[in-house]
Image (cartoon, rainbow, N blue to C red; front, side, top):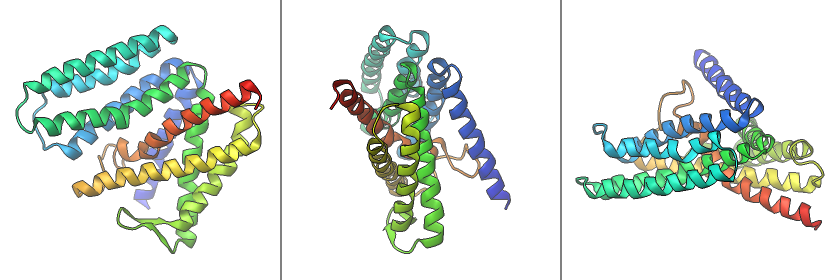
Length: 275
C-alpha cells in the first residue's frame, strides 16, 4: 500500500509538471523541462552502458550539448532560435568527437553511447520542444494524454484479462490483451482530443493517430526494456520513487514523439491542400 501511494504521488507530480509546462508559457517552460528530463535520462543511459567512472570532460560536454541544443528555443522562439540550436548542436558534435580522440579505452564504447544517447533521447525531446515553441503545445499535451491513456488501458485490461504474453523475453508482465486494451483507450482518447488540438480534422484521423501512437509507445517501452535486459538491470535509475528513473518514465515518448510529429506534418499537409 505504501509503495502504491508513493508511486501515485510521484506520478501526479510528473503529470502536473508536464501539464503545467504546456499550459503556462509553453514556449519557455516546456523546453526548460525537456532539458531537465534529457539531462537525467542521458545520465541514466550512460550508466547503463559505461562502467562507473569519475566525472570527466566528455561528461561535461554531453551535458553542455543538451543545454546548447534546446536552450536557444526559449530565448528565440522563431527560425533564428532553430538555426542557433542546430549550429550549437554541430559545435557539440565536433567538440565531443575531438575530446574522444584523447580519451583512453574504451573510447569507442563511450563515444557510441554518447551518440546513441543524443539520437535516442535528446532528438525526440528536441522535436516536441520545437512543437511547443511554435504554437503546438496543445498537440504535445494531447500526445502525453494519449501515452497516459495507453499505459492506463494496458495496465487495467492486462491486469484483469491478460493471458497471452506480448513479449515475455523483454517484459514478462505485458500481455496482448493489455496491448489491445491500451490501443482502444488511446484511439478513443485521440478521437475526443482531435477537435481540441487540431480542429476540422476528420475523426478517422484521430482514431488512426491513437492506434499508431499506441503501437509506437509500446514499441518504445519494449526497446527500453531490451536495453535494460541487456545490462541485467530492472530500472534505469531510482530518482522517481515507485517508477525507477526518468528514462523508465519517458521510454514510450522517445519513439512516439517523432512518429507523432511526422503524422502532424502529414495531417497539416492534407488539411492545407484539402485532400
